[in-house]
Image (cartoon, rainbow, N blue to C red):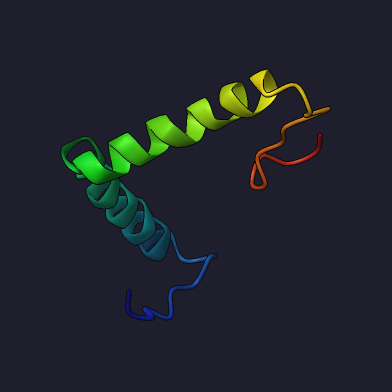
Length: 65
């Protein structure tokens, strides 16, 4: 992705960011690799916890435990 030098205090730039995000998100359901990867990622904690040696399973980008 290229740098766009957008300013957070410019309403037009904020609209540009939202439009870019809408465009990017609209392609997600059509990307079978991404959908399958997210499904597998969400199942990992269940598999790891059933092995019997996990005390806690935390997603790294999920915030505080």
